Image 1 (cartoon, rainbow, N blue to C red):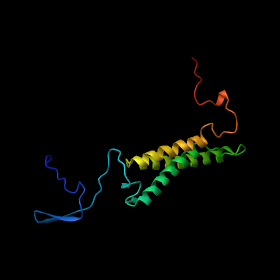
Image 2 (cartoon, one colour):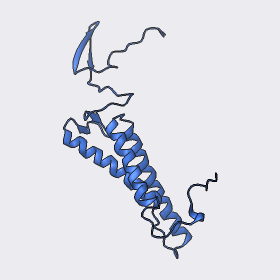
Image 3 (cartoon, rainbow, N blue to C red):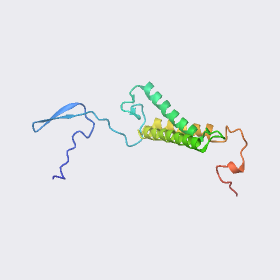
Image 4 (cartoon, rainbow, N blue to C red):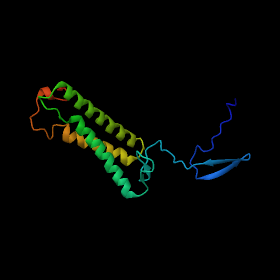
Length: 157
């Protein structure tokens, strides 16, 4: 076995071309470089191969999609869909299904952010932030806050 000789052909970005090596024909395929640092611009692949493409309108649609995923994920984290008189089995099944959907949405947002596109990162944070503002914070709550429902401990000087 030869452990020192590594063949790296086809590992980088290449166009569809044919290489001749020692009488053998090798076909390499086009591969897109994956960013490992944040970058700005609308030329990104988000969640699916070739999506949103290079058109700016599709990039904006992708940003709206990621925002909605994050916003809906926050809504599912803070919504109360259980009725007070429902059985334990029904409540448990509904909670489990909602948890699976919420986690699925959270993973989709995480994978979108892993595109390392700055715009995707910003809209994901904005979606989570606005979702929390509307559904998790006290801004739009109808009942007055009490000390028992406080999210943070009281601070004394």
